[in-house]
Length: 182
Image (cartoon, rainbow, N blue to C red):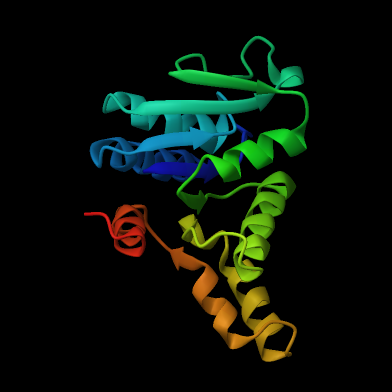
């Protein structure tokens, strides 16, 4: 299974975020799955890739050409796909993935999360979407989504298009269950 990671490239974050990301990477690789991500060397992106590699996992990076500078891209990718634009990058990440996991991040991560849940809501894919709520980072986002449902802007059925997790461990099991793979 190709598991797509969306998350921060920033290194100016608490160690707990990177630790959870590293653990997730080890779990992806230990399950025999492939990590596909935005190619970043730092933040939760880099930590997840290093975690996967620590267990001899396969790591695929997808990044626009203007990120191809010293220190920006993770240099131990098994495959690195260089795109022209951020839009092309996001499209490739979505198309090549079987499941999505959203780690703490900024506005780019929010964009990626909302795009995959909109596409799922519209029936453009049926891939599972997990949100890793490390240190309660996404608790307010979860509350916002609940308010959106409560106020009638989304149907209650939309709750089934994403799932929130406080720790990395159950995410791989969730993906395998959702996709019928053990």
